[in-house]
Length: 454
Image 1 (cartoon, one colour):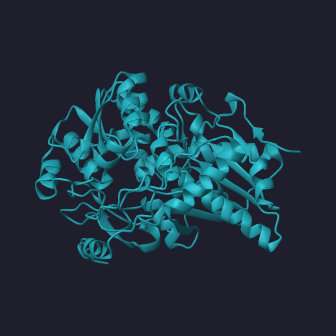
Image 2: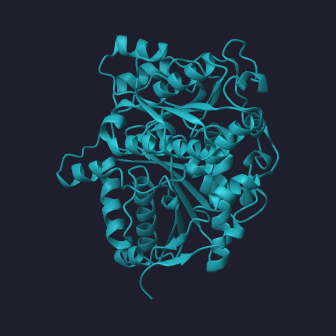
Image 3: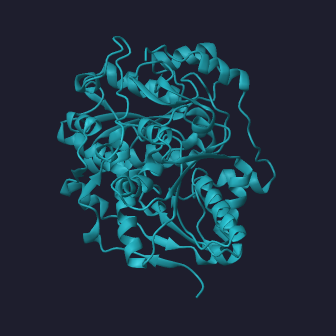
């Protein structure tokens, strides 16, 4: 048999609860710290930024957290997303492995990000909030929150990393179509933005800088709350709707993944596909391999330190223990804007420290090579971020070919690349380069990590 095989659940089978891996961890993760007192941060420390329901999810250790029906009703616009077996890619590779991908590009915004944008907007609406501020890299998150804001009548201001703002005008146009206001970061509208521009007038920006601007806006105005597209526990929690669906779909397919793969910037789409499977393993289920793939130009997990650090450049956030390149580190201007973050989700960092997952780094050109092969076999053009997961899945399939193993591989296709064709044009014109970070800048950023007593 040739071609794709799709496994699609009925909309009534959308999960009724999100999965919280904190309930099953063998060692609890280190707490967030208040930067002033260096004591564990409590719910009150997060209240200026988030509504209380999201704060309670952030600190929860309950295994299941119910998905409110109004959120499930909106999920029905695109969920359940299809699980697809990539048989044409398997045949092109000549591998005995079976390759499956969960296609999150079918959402209205074209990525996995609405899985958390919709809940965050809904909980804010329930709390009476009418304006949200946020950051975005490539624009997947910004466009998703703009979409959610339009559904619930919430104004959204997005600080987009300058290099992506310039590289991806159609992402900006999508945000504006949904009604959001999009600003290049660093901007002149915040103290943190003006401080960066005074020192680096041509700064390409970073997610750390954009987070500082969005947090500053929310912290200074009680009428505004902040929304984050990755990293924090409640964001990863919302994304598990994807992995929970995959478990049901593999039962439908009569198969089960041996290797689960996702690209990582802040960690949310990887956690969404991997944590439900990792949770089954932690509760006594069979062992699998989990591979988190990052860009070699921003190697947070493979080169960073596991330490307490700020989530933003201006040091406005609590301290969290995570893999970090240092909050002042500004990655090179690669096309995978959504993966250009100096830190990694504390929960993803924690399970990596426990040896439960692997981390791998890939260069940009190799990822686009893989994306072109995938597109020509399966017909889907991946977002630059997703190319990292595609590249790893192909590598794993070729390993199976060398070893003669018929393993089952699952990767999360976190979004489509329809608004990222400038990157593909650069690839075909031979202008795409493998960016390298500055070792001296990395050393300087790591040297500036906060001093936290053991």
